[in-house]
Amino acid sequence: MIKAAVTGACGQMGGLIIQNIVKAENLQLSAAFDIVNIGKDAGEVAHAGALKIPISDARNIKNVLIETDTNVLIDFTIADATVHNAPAAAGCGVNLIIGTTGLSPHQRAIIDDAILKNNVSAVISPNFSVGVNIFFNILKQTAKYLSDYDIEIIEAHHNKKKDAPSGTAMKAADVISKTLGDKEYVFGRHGTAPRNKEIGIHAVRGGDIVGDHTVLFAGDGERIEIKHQAHSRNMFAAGAVKAAEWVCGKQPGVYTMDDILGI
Ligand SMILES: NC(=O)c1ccc[n+]([C@@H]2O[C@H](COP(=O)([O-])OP(=O)(O)OC[C@H]3O[C@@H](n4cnc5c(N)ncnc54)[C@H](O)[C@@H]3O)[C@@H](O)[C@H]2O)c1
Image (cartoon, rainbow, N blue to C red; front, side, top):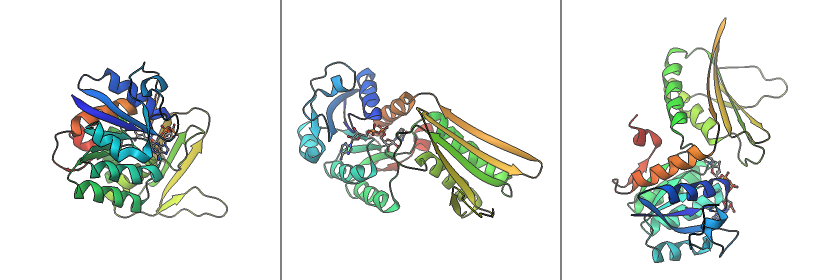
């Protein structure tokens, strides 16, 4: 049985991840961390039924991970928390699944460094849905043929999302930029803003939109729009829990969803 811990256990994603761990055959919840609801039953907070696993203060993460003999930590929190919690877990020999978005390049370098130095395995992805990772691959193929078209990325999310643009929109831009050679990114436009050969990136926030991403390739006389729409957050959680099963026993290193999907 793989022992899995969750950081951000009281968040929207953390709750769904705990529900998916409870349903998984090969995983059991070993610990749950947050900065709120300390001491409460993690299963009850996650609406997964009582599990007799208390929510621990994230400041004690090292002690609790060692005491509970945890194999993998699933982290969906905020970048400033992940940059502390992920290296702490790696230092205890715990594998990692990181779904938190909005990590700066510096924060990402700190996390990658800790993973490699401590010889653990990790999957880091701004989006754990299967469909979005297929979408990234369609973008790669399309960009090869439409390199002279204007490219705009439009994403829409719920009004509680903290970072903008989304990690998925940034990954889509990076996939296209890598395919076409370095592209400049322009975030929104305001006032006099002539278009050059950049990738335009636009974030919409409202209501309870789970996550829409549209990539527009616009040429003279035609356009293609490639769109992914998430209907429920649960497929992100289910993908992260599957990744947790997959990563345990892999050679140390930093993996992506492409590795899991065999793309
Ligand atoms: N990769 C993906 O597939 C995917 C999908 C959805 C959301 N996300 C990302 O996951 C993250 C969380 O999203 P959410 O909607 O669950 O947010 P949320 O605000 O509902 O939950 C975040 C939780 O983290 C907790 N937290 C804050 N600081 C902490 C710390 N130091 N240690 C432990 N816990 C701490 C908060 O108290 C909260 O309970 C965001 O970055 C979001 O963009 C990723």
